[in-house]
Every structure is written in structure tokens, then in C-alpha cells.
Length: 262
Image (tube, rainbow, N blue to C red; front, side, top):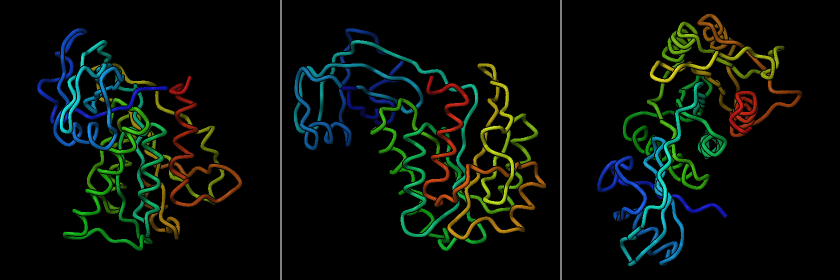
């Protein structure tokens, strides 16, 4: 069984890349309390500590109490950033369907998430509600990254209107990326959409935007604006999926095509 994952709080006592096998890392704060009180981790058990940006410490618990774990580092791994970034543009949805979508997308392997205030979104992020809702998205992504044992926590970007999203699509395409707009009337399958060439380390990486509408779908006006900016309408298959499942399914297909699951 893979080791449970805990996130370094603020980088921990030092950036994780400074640690080497044989060093001791102290996990404290909220993560230390969760490990000690909720999960009851004990000496001799294996746990991983990640910084959310690709670095992972493989450790063994040396000592544990209610608030801290003392960990012996056995290995340090640095996961390179994927050469093509996957970005889920998730329309705000009622209930918890948008949160279900970003949770599953994180488990699948999405790199960033962009909340979209679509024309037919029943939910509206405004004022204090926007701050609370975004905080829930951040917490959902963080928990899903830990559950799926990821060393990278996807970025949750600020929410956008359709106007701002069209601008983002235009910028992405101009930079060599692609924007796949999931739509039930599209004729081009996602499986045949041309994907960008991998980027080189140290350069801006190309992105694949996966645009998912709300329960009522993407309006004709929105589709026109997004395709006018360079977006490509694509379909997943013969069935119409919910807003909570369309994104994760599309990302699964893209991860396979990009060789992430090889």
C-alpha cells in the first residue's frame, strides 16, 4: 500500500529540497495534528511529506504525539512539471456538482482549475460568497491531492467571466496551446483533437484548456465567443455527461493520450 501524504505547512521548517536521507523532518501544525490525532500514526509507519510543487520526502515515523510527528527522511524525490499543462475550466454549478468535478479532476491529474461564471450558472460568486466558495474549492483540491498521493497540488485560479475566458482562450492558442470546448453538438471527437507539442524545461509550458459548461449547457452566444477566440468544440462520445463528470472523463482521455498514465 502506498504511504499516506501530508502537506508541508508553509514549506515546513525548511524547503523540502534541502533535506537528504538521514535527516529528521518534524511535521507539526494542522497536518501534524491530523496525523497524530485523526490518523493515529505511530513509530515505524511510512508517510510521505510533499510541498505541493513536486517535491516528496519519503519518511518513516520515529516518534509521534498529539501534535507532531518526528520523521526520518529515507528519500527525496522531485517530480518534474508535465511538459503539457492540463487546465480544467469548470463552470459554477448548483449543489456540490462543481466541487465533485474538481475533486475527481484533481485525482485524475489536472494541473490547474479555472472557475467560470457562465451565463447559465445558477450559482453566482459575489462578495463574501465568492471568498467562501473559492476557499471550499481550495480545500477540496488540497484534500483530493493528498488522497490521491500527489506531490503537486493543482492551482485554483481566480474565477472569470465569459469575456475574460475568451481572452484566456485567445492567449492560450496564441502561445501554442489548445482550448477544447466540450459541447454535445460538436462533431470532432476529443480523441482526435491535435494536442500541443511538449514544452521545454525552463520555458512557458503549453496548456490544454478543457471547458465544461454548467447544468444548462454552454449558450450559443458563449460558444460563438469561445470558438471565435480559437476554441475547438469537441465531444466526448454518444452520451451527454453531467457537469460533474464531463471534465474528469475528458481529462482521463487526455492523460492517456499525453502518456501520463503509461
